[in-house]
Image (cartoon, rainbow, N blue to C red; front, side, top):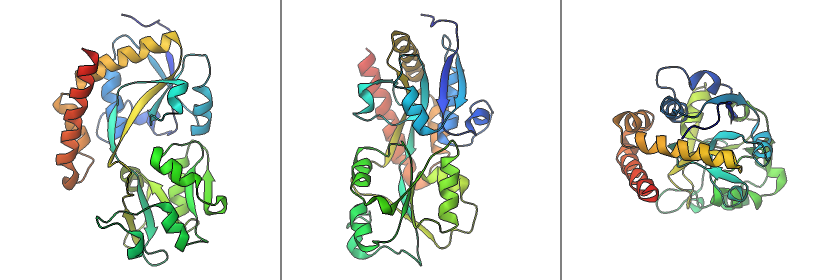
Length: 272
């Protein structure tokens, strides 16, 4: 099946994707996975463009066929978007904090070493603030926790450079806490990290699935079908597994390997 010849707009909120999606090498899980996927898409041609997350949310609600990368699937978004199978699995968000200024107390931590919740954190640090990207979903559990925080404790940041901008705010002590992916934090935090610590958040998944989402149109249905067909072809390959393992600590590699194997089996069954 050939999807219409006209290129489909594919949106990203990270300007670096304009280079990394098409440049050989290993840079991060997302760009490496999308590069591999695009190389295996025979009948779909995308044109990559950059837009802020909030703008992407708006465009994906329109009747025009348009798609976006690195989308987290949520119940609300499923009402107006079509989703591919997961393109990649990403080590999940962690809460970053300064050891000297905002140390975590034992009462904030579970027996397994995770932050109990954000409410517990800000119940103690009542005047502290946290940087959040406007329009971004952090997953169902974290999204719900963020809605319960006082607005004065949240610094919202929009724009196509939001990843880097929020980390710079944290680096300059303009915000006290930051929720970020470990690989993103490593990429953009340039100072000495000896005074920085991070913690996983209870009831938040260890790995987040990133999808391609498209506006809900008949053409999008064909595009998603082609993407899923390509993903089923690359899931069981050594290249797909190795590019994930390259970017995660040794302690997480065994679990991630199992999750990727489960990914293939789950979606292979759905497609049969």
